[in-house]
Amino acid sequence: MNQQLLQVRRLKVDDLPALEKMKTGIEDDYVIHIFDRLIHSSTQGLFGLFQGNRLISLAGYSLFGQNQFAMIGRLRSDMRYRGKGFAADLLKHVIEHIKDKNYIKWIGANTHVHNLSARRLLEKSGFTPDKVTHCLTLTKPASLSSHTPGPIWEEIAGTQTKRKILLSIESNELGLFPYECYYPFPYDPAFFTDHYLHDAHLYMNPSGDRFVLIKNDQKKYKYSHTKYFWNDHYEQPGFFETILHHWQQNPENTGCWIDISEEGFRKIPDLSPYDVQKPWVLYKH
Image (cartoon, rainbow, N blue to C red; front, side, top):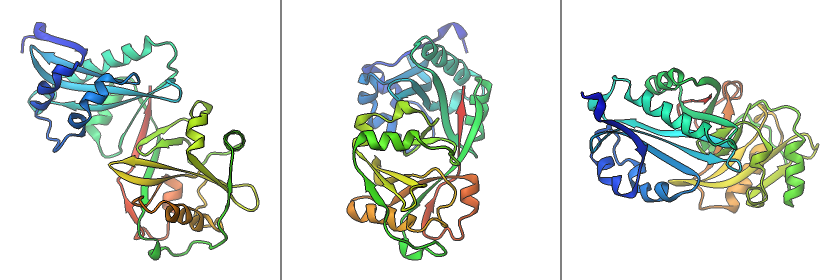
């Protein structure tokens, strides 16, 4: 290949045909469906490595937490050009672009533990692995067993009160803040905005030493996205009654998505009530 023909640039609306011609092996690639929205978004960046007019590698980022946190994603390459280092060259360009924005204080990426090619690319690009999480969706509550029953926890109103509770946390056994489904970040006040907390439901247990934050989220399907920062899901009286109560109040949701640490996952006595994903690993730069 003639290296002089290679060019990295931000994608434009009229680059959609080039994206559609990529042979990535991904069936029904969602990036194609939301391409126009990505291109016009002020919090998204999408870059491509081109050989002439042919798009051979793609990478992007999304900004969260008042634009202070950048999540790398949408990594894909044309299968005919893999193994040549082009994806790493593109990712290096994207990282440099992000670092030029002095208001961004964190750069990360989230991928499956078993996705060794993506992990090699990230580590080659200066990322280091951080927390591993398991994403489970509780869809069959009738199969729950061995949990501690109890009353539904009290719902706390008011964005200022919710923020105060989130800021008072002394230990975070989950090790991160699952801002959205598929998007975990460091536990940081930048995510606790009025808008986010207004739409989230916070429930406090009777003893006042545990809470769960649930926010409806949609990633193809709708979920009760459950954020709990301890590993005692099955020991806490009323935890499951509380999240199931929220689901009952929002029957359009598919189930209760729960991000769980490795230790918390090992403590689950029976996985049959859940749809279980392969574990994810969060990387930071």
